[in-house]
Image (cartoon, rainbow, N blue to C red; front, side, top):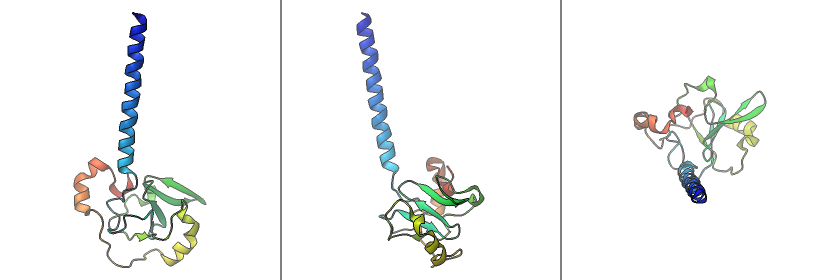
Length: 147
């Protein structure tokens, strides 16, 4: 009797772990690698943006901003605090179509010179309109990089 109860508990535990693992994999796989709603239209295969106004990179696959802080490159899901009010929808994004590694900042000095603060080649249409995003930001928490 006791063995039967133990076997049932183990079976329920294993099923719970399998179900949780499958659900977690589905949730993660759905979100990885999608460009953010504020990203420019037409670049579904790129991995990084460079934001010249902030001198910050954005890793699309990892959904992380990459910025220099006291000589160290930091990866985070949020913009640095000092840029918390930066409008990602209206700020210019340089699409790095020619880089496919893990450290886009390897070329930071070149990017910083070529795409100086204020660099702008004109209006960029974003993947999602800002007004559409505002209506559903409670669902995806991607408002200006703050989660």
